[in-house]
Length: 193
View 1 (cartoon, rainbow, N blue to C red):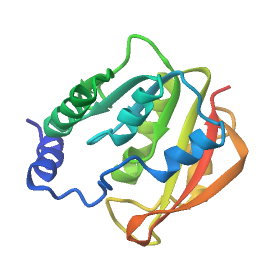
View 2: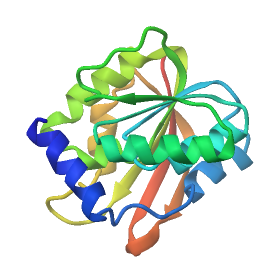
View 3: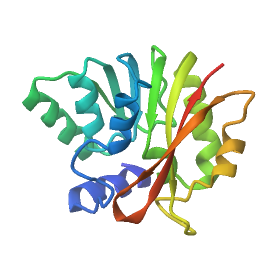
View 4: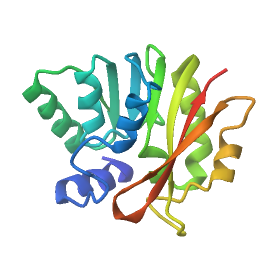
């Protein structure tokens, strides 16, 4: 195992997963309840224990989930099996993975803020390649107000630069969602041209 795998796998094996809320996020509920997210082929990068994967599979989405930690993928597969649900689970480093078929949507909540900022541009490039034309990125930009991470603070002006208008159309509507542990996320829907 490489060091990235070891780091995240160790967190799952030792239960050092303070970001794991034990259920699907309120942000996903917001997107669904307000009609922004409808059944489609969707990717969840950095899925972890995959509560959003389970919720979307229950609603009839064609879900693909990827994580670098074997324990996270195993936990998610067990949870899906218990509920008789299907999703495609990928154990891989998403910087090295390319799908055979692109996606209509990506639910991005945990990966960007977990990555050191020097990797953000590379990650944005992956997101661009994973989405179909007109594909939607359901982005949640964490606001920690602190240096360092993970999670890393996703300053909104930096996000506008990271996802430039020539590659992404930003929705005018956005929402602020309170998150456990006193953090806030700014939700934006971005669309590929």
